[in-house]
Amino acid sequence: MEEYKTALYMFDEMRQLDAPIDLCTMNIAINFYCLLKRVNFGFAMLGCIFKLGYEPNAVTFTTLVKGLCLNDKVIEAENLFLNLLGHNLSVTDEVMISTLINGLCKGGWTSRACDLLEFLERTSCKPNAYSALMDGYCSQGRIDKVKGIFRSIVEQGLEPNMFTYAILIKGCFKKGKVDEAWCIFHKVSRKGLQHTTVTYNTMLHGLVCAGRFSEGWKLFGDMEAQQVRPDIITYGILVKGLCADGRVAAARDLLHQLPSKGLRPDVRMYTTIIASLHRKGLIEEGKRLLKEMKENGLRRDETLERLIRERDEL
Image 1: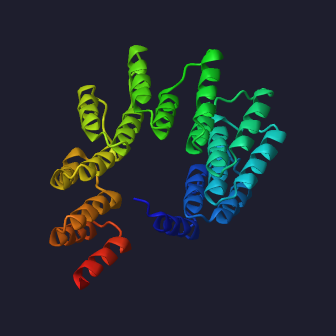
Image 2 (image 1 turned 135 degrees about the vertical axis):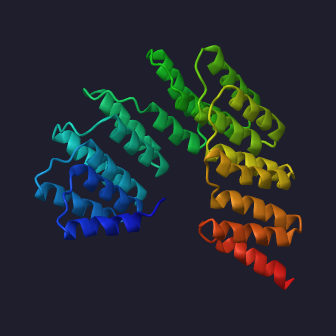
Image 3 (image 1 turned 135 degrees about the horizontal axis):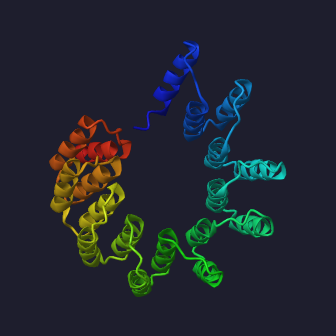
């Protein structure tokens, strides 16, 4: 529910009541502090772990690495990792490396991430964090680098996973190469691999952004036929596509079907539909949907409310 502050308040109550607290509980608390961008409190909790006689594990340090990255302290995260590695601690693992590589790439330090991977390959670590590096180069639009890493994976005899293929597909869309993205998507099927929600979502998003929603809608039908379960991201893409296609009523109907599928509509979906209703001049419908959004316990969207006020003044 993303009620991190409430959870931390309960954690403080546990401590005040001298309730038993184990390493798992403290790791969860560190994660919440990091998600609230209060990583300094996360490190204070690390001190508590030592004080209570526990040994921090890979989850503890991976969470702190992630927290530093979320707080735009990527270089500090790298230093923490290298310190752990220098002490030959077993807490460094594949998840931590991927987290750090991902953080470096998103922070604009893709070359540094590449250097780190090359350094690790010369050690006994031998990480498999190529997907995170590919994603970093993809975000920068450097598709040549993405393809180069993909070829390197294949040449090393490693089997690309579905996330790797999804990044390759995303890279094709970034360059406007829709047909090439389709070729890669079909290639996966011919190799006998099972598409996941991730690859379907990547294709759907690319097709919607390319203005080829009709192909995306057919792909969604194939997704259901293959019994790949759509998630909230899938439906968010479909809502965006339907609105862009001028089918706002269909988007609203899809939104209202989500609870029956065990999914909860998010603010972004409501925002997309309400903005589309306003562009069509359907102000009252937009207001009703905004009221419904609030009644469902979703956070208020100030941008939408300002839009409604401006329309009312006109």
